[in-house]
Every structure is written in structure tokens, then in C-alpha cells.
Length: 220
Image (cartoon, rainbow, N blue to C red; front, side, top):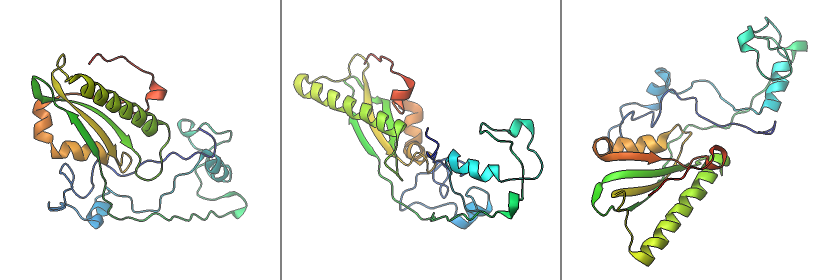
């Protein structure tokens, strides 16, 4: 990653929708928490948070003074890490945060190919796409693989009337949003179908980040 690159993620404690843990976030269903309750319980952060590139982090850390950080806390930047809280030469740091805490609607794209002999058994081929930016390596490489598999399956089915018979299960092609909000995408899918998938779920295959992790052949 370049020194100006920023790794985005979630600092929420837990996965899925913080207002309806372990339950699907459907419009007409009861929410077991409010945003205020999620903050009070330590689920959502109560302080401003801003992801930094390691170039910006270097500028902050290089100006910190105070006790030397323990050996295990010394990081990979070319400096000695101090615990603060003061800064050298009485410097001050101003952080401008434009984040807002609002409810958003997410949309997942789901396609399926019914199995020839065991359509109630499911193999899921799933990948996420980013909800806040256009994404980078893992969502886009995985989405490209997912889209190409969907195209190839569709083409073969139209030409040959093929169905997954040698592995006679239903294939679900799943493109989910909001991986880093945090892991809302799959949590919501499996919260909705918990009883269904716990009985009939056979396999989940994720091409997420496939260009980085390499390819494996899977005979379908």
C-alpha cells in the first residue's frame, strides 16, 4: 500500500446491524436497541474516529513525547514510539471529522440456479462490494470473478439446458454490500435465513480478493 493509502474498516464491537443483533433488519421488525443504547453499551464508538495513512500517522507519532512505548508497542515506522500525551514544541493537532451516524438502506444482488435433483441444498458463491467508496483489490477482483462465473453459467444454461447435476444442489450467486459496516452483508443474509441455512447449507465459496490469494480449481 502506498504511504498515502488509507485502510478503512469498522470499530464497532460486533457484526451485523447494531440495532438488531442476530436478527434481520427488516423495516417492519422490532429493533432491540437504539443508537444511544448501542453507544452506552460500548457497541458503537462515542469519540470522533478518522482513519489515517501511515504517512500522516508518521507526522503525528514523530511529534509525540512522554514515556517511551513498551517494546511490544514499537511499530514499523522509522521512529521511536512514545506514549504522549504531550507533543514536542507544544504542537497541537486538529482533526476535522465529517462522519455522520445515519441509517442507510443496503441492497444485495442475489441470483440462483436450481439444482436438478436436490434443489433444497445450497452452495453459495458470494462476494462483497463496497458501500462507501468504489473499492480496491478485494471487492473488485472478487466481483469480476463472480460476474464472469454468472455469465459463463448463464451462457451454458441457455445453450445446453445444463443444471448442476453432478453436484445436484442449488447455486446461489450473492453480491453483498456493506462488508465494513461491519460485516452487515452476510450477517443480514444469514440472520434472515438462519433456520434454512443451518439445515440445508452445504458450502460457501468466496472469490473475495482472488487476485491476491491465487486461484483454485473447483469441479462443479
